[in-house]
Image (cartoon, rainbow over all chains, first blue to last red; front, side, top):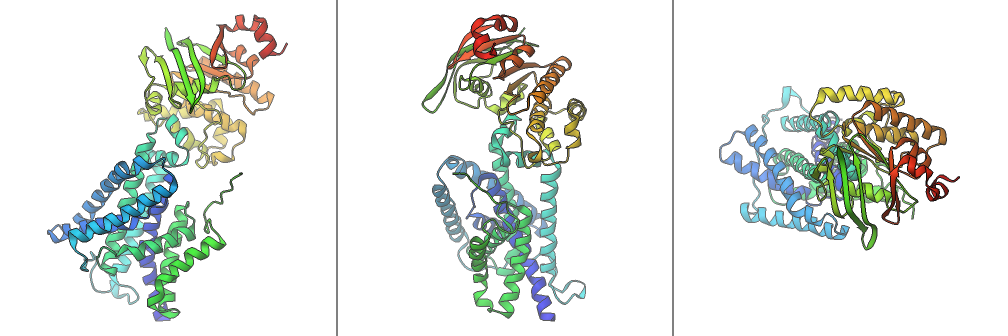
Length: 290
Length: 236
């Protein structure tokens, strides 16, 4: 029983990270109807920036904050320079650009930092929190950070005029323009926010999986599974899916299929959801008349 | 004082020319109607004013040239467009739709007061303020579209077929409220309508558009007396 509880709680910790990344995917999907395959590599790249800052002697939380800001700017830049010119391109062209972005970021990071695996510090103490035996401080801290990010995002979209404008632009671009919203900038802002969330996820997952240019490959797959399980157009669904996938992955990996096959859980989930319920548990079903 | 002056306005969707050089003008504080049959180019004229289609020709608002500017900037000049199809943000609440109407305004205090005033015109919207706008009826969504435009506190309101899809009794009510709004707000109205009788009742002058050209212009009284207008658009 102890072991089971331990796996569930550890699953919640990584699940929170999947949930953040899934949320980043959903944000961009809602605004543009594209799935950003490079979301994981963008997160990885910004995590390396955090690593550089910390190694240069910047205190952890300052490095954390700075990285989030840099990631935000980086996301906006990517939207302006790479995505904007192809906004009317056919969907396959967009997919190719996303994959190119993925490969470029991966290689550039490898080129700058080499492919050697690096350790990444956790801001949380090494000993168990409050003598709690089921979870490490980092796992508990990661859940806390994830929840804080989700809460902040919720407050931003729900209670600020800018958040409302972003939701409006994602829903109905033409009407949004007619009330004076600069729709193009709202998209760029969405990319910035998604990149910032990704950076937080990267910094939270790096102490667990270690830092290397391929660290986000698996995480992104889990995030895809999470977003699909919850419904790719529903932020709450993505968060729920993230935690669910994290727990499933851990429990199945520990007791059923073994650690080597863990990643296939994500793939099975993706295929299963697409076969049985393509809109996910909470997604809206779209019917098109032809 | 001239509020809007349009000269040689042309527009096309792809290779299909829809407007072939439209000229018209309206004064500050006027209600002007654009009449015409389906496909004459009325909606396109309104869309052209807001840069929602590619256009040639000149558009002056309050003496300033606004053609070639982006839609978002024309809105900032005080032009509120009530589009055909109503343009509701379906997944947002009624009140969020109204807040969006005032998105470009900086005077937050006055916006709150305007919200109350708008609810005064359309009490039904107050009852439904927390409801998702997509669940409103067609008539309520039309009220919402007009209210959203009012929240900009506009100089000029462009109304695209406000009567479309509404029951005759509702249309009568709606035009009554438009008249009230016009009297109480400092706003000019440019109205596109297929319901020519209602439009001429409300407007003080009108232009008749046929296949992308203005073919007749005058005061509403003139147009009502014109035999061809009477036969083709008023039906008696």
